[in-house]
Amino acid sequence: MKLGNKVKVLNLDHFVGTKSVDAEKRPKKLVGKTGKIVDINLGVFKVDFGNDLVDYFDGRELQLSEDLKKVPVDLVFVSWQRNGKSIFGSEEETEYFEGDFRRGVHFKGTIELDEEEIKRVKKGLDNEIRPVFDLHIIEGDRRKHRRDG
Image (cartoon, rainbow, N blue to C red; front, side):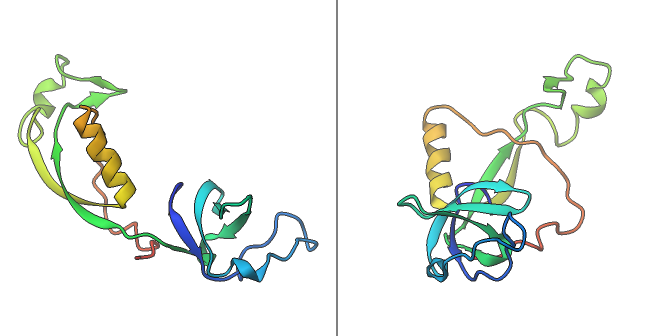
């Protein structure tokens, strides 16, 4: 879960208040409510339910409450960079600017986005604004902790 996600409160079982034993009990009316994550700090999610109702939750108390779509994407290679600057023209150029990773080469991929993100990306593309990513090879599945829909 990330900032801006809509979430549903599943239970009030896990979060321990920020105060000691005197922590206030959270109202049971929150169970089943849907809100938006407005802040995350050390695994504690601040959720805004509107009408000045905000509360804090452990991630185990929340469920993602929006649909993610698998979106096919073209990843277009731009450049090899170090510290935000291309290494084109450096001694390392020949080693890296060969094979599949050359400017303009397309790769097929799939990412998961919600409707709001899809609209934002399409609007950006219409205005010639493109998201840019770093490529990381992931060994094993680091996303096992993620809850699916």
